[in-house]
Amino acid sequence: MRVWIITVGEPIPFEKTFGRIFRSGLLAKMLTEAGHEVVWWTSSVDHFSKKIYPQASEGECILPGGIKLIFLKSILYKKNISFRRLINHFGTARHFTKLAQSVPLPDIVLCSFPTVELSYNVVNFCQKRCIPVLVDVRDLYPDVYINLFPNILRPLAKVLLYPMQWMTQKAMQGATGIIAISKTYLNWGLDYAQRSHNKYDGLFPMAYPRSEENLLPASQFTSKFKKITDKKIILYVGSFVSSIDLETVISAAKILKERKNEDFHFVLAGDGGYKELWENMAINLDNVTFTGWIDSPKINWLAHNAWAGLGAYKKDALMSLPNKILEYMNFGLPILSSLDGETREFIEENNCGLYYEAGNPESLIACLDQLIETPKKREEMVVSSKKNYMEKYTPARIYGDFIQHIEKVCE
Image (cartoon, one colour):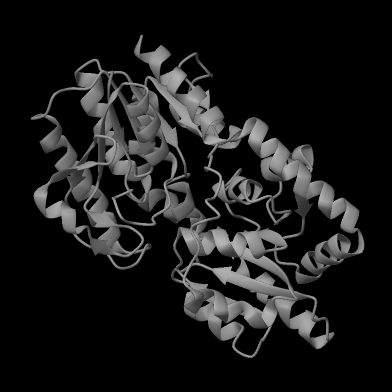
């Protein structure tokens, strides 16, 4: 098959980089290894560094393994929530429609959702040419924007964002099949499509390859943590955005310091719009460390030295089974998560962590106390986390099934 993968906002696995390979990168690699031709369409803007990819000036390039990468050009943006980012999304979608008419057509298209505008244009393009297209739901846009407004203003937000809701509906209705990373996300997509489940739909969670322990970071980085080698490291890795609740984590650290409990140290790795706010909150706490954005070897090293992983989400966050949960399972870390519903059920079913109440630092501390007071139970979680990950959630298992589904839809 010739497969188009259309994904923006995901790290590109260029040669001689330590960028982590995510969902589209892994799928592209595995599809190529299975003998298929892959064309990956992405934005010219690196979502993480907020810079234009140097390779984008050529318009396209070839990735390791023979994957063709085509850049969709639009304006640069510096903030995740900004008017310039919305303009970027419209520009990217428009450039796709222009370029796609001049290249060999695919046998099937896999389009990540969001962005709303690009997904709408892709589905519209495929419908007109009778090309099967699968929309892969990874986030609930534009609902996440509506969720940023106070309850009293949400009716107004729905009016303002109606064009995005309309495009989302048309993208879901026009897709041959809807793919999602969780049951909640799949049902959300089907609700927008106003139909029931069909044989072209599929549920394929996020999956990560086992970490490479031999890729060690420089001693300049590891030396910063020599003073806390005797501490139990509670690790958060991810974006510092509105759906994340590190305020509760920092409040828990403050309470532990006041109680002179020196067992734990919180390492918060990532970057985003809330970084300055949370760093200021923790300015006098010696049991909290911010690392900033870090690459894969540093994440691996921290995870292998951590005692537990944090899934710190706000009470009204629209996540259902975030990639962070499976990433911590990959590292064999017990998970402390504030997400109720599907994530809580998943953690309990796989015996890989504990639930704490979002916004309640005492609830988080109670989970830490429970783990430290019952070391046997924690060790069972470590074993169960690794076992379930290896049996059910490796890239070979998840994306192998995903590729078989793509092949069947194409047939």
